[in-house]
Amino acid sequence: MGIVAYEMLTGDVPFNSESAVETLMMQLEVVPKLPGEIEPTIPEQLEQLVMRMLEKLPEDRPASAAEVKREIARIKRQLTNAETQISQTSSIAETLIPPDPAERGSAETSREQLPVGARRLETDVSGTIDPAEVMARSETSRLKLQRPRPPWVVPALAGAAAVLVLALVAYALSKRATL
View 1: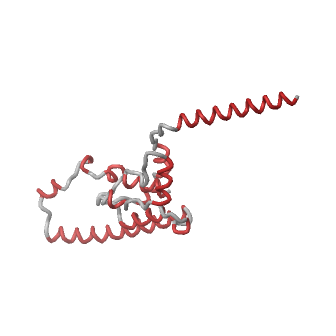
View 2: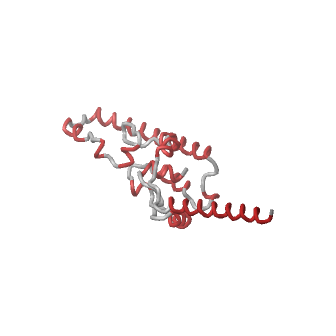
């Protein structure tokens, strides 16, 4: 779950190498970049949860998907409360000092100008990422995600199939010889 969440937030995998063995070793030994270093719009609480999900030792990771769901709900409540406070403060400020129309036009941002993670995820009006939405999409995104097959996979499978066929032929011949 941690790797999928990381990729959904940043648009990049936490561990990437030319070979499967190197990638596995990275998963065991390397601490990935913080998601906020790649995508600065990620809330710190969500970043901390994803990093906990990527911990090396199982006892350091969330114990279950239910625990992750509860944590995401807590983060969402915190962010919603913070947005409400900001919205209330903004409306008071706008009442006292109306916004400059020229600034309002420059605040609009095209989709292409947004960071990768913000383009990939639905964002609300304030531009924050909804953590519940991130995790809800993890299953469907995993199904859509297709990485290119490493070049050694097909020859390795063909070689394994050839060894299996030879072993079956040798077994059949040894049974025939004993009859």
